Image (tube, rainbow, N blue to C red; front, side):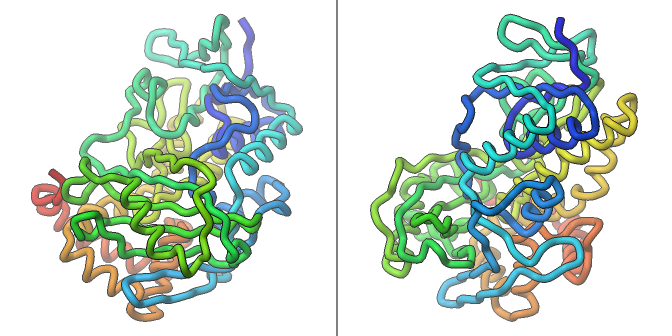
Length: 405
């Protein structure tokens, strides 16, 4: 049986960050990925300043990424364009980098650091009692001190570990495609916060235009499960409707590929256990207010690797505590907020408020940029803490009267 210090299941940003950080620290690491090298992951391709900061910390060259200097938010006829804030912790710019290029660059860095990568091979947890002791990959078994689950949205691995999405919490669905645009070099992400379904009902979510700087834009829409008749929502129709709103302004050409949809997990029943930890999307680390999770994936992957190198015997429990302290409060607020905006009347009033004044719009900007957590509270963090306390009181009522059928 082959043996490694770390086995990583999944070669996305979270898994790659773990492999890079652990291998550079001298650990033996193998990564298993079901897809071939250079695979495309369905995604909006947007990188927040937080994600750019994590990539810089990993030493990733972002020359090929298209720089983004701010966010343009649209709510009805109100348009507000704001620069990313200049903070001590995060750079004042984001980026757009198609996932097939981002992921390949990260895995190249992992290999350069000394990690082994096995493509087109599915790995599943291997148990000794209730402890994960490695993986079964194809026809062989591989032992490891720690298995890092970086599999994205819950699937077979999550079911085996009882680490599926919490069915009582919200989730999201999104769809995207690419199109040529004369504005492909725009330096702002654009988010339209006022989406409506085919019946004219406000949709808790947003439509986006993410300029890639290569002649194309990533165009997509996302929605939360807390809206009424969510199961009947047709994402293709919603995307077509949104495309009609922006087609002229962005001078869009035809879609360059068939629109593709994906699920956004925003919770998990477990994110660690004996011999394993889950990171990134697999740990439910997705912001319910924007569907973004690349930055959390990078950070949680680096954190898991560093804690493993520091003490392999306590890594799982310590990791869970550290992730909880850093992210749980903010993400809980987001999930509670998603139940609130699942009600159309509240959603309409909230969107007007979100971009109505520059002060509140700046808070919205930091929330949309994933710039708030326990380590960087600031004004936005204090406002969200107050909001969380109010939502905690209202949460049982919101769940009982939730708009979702």
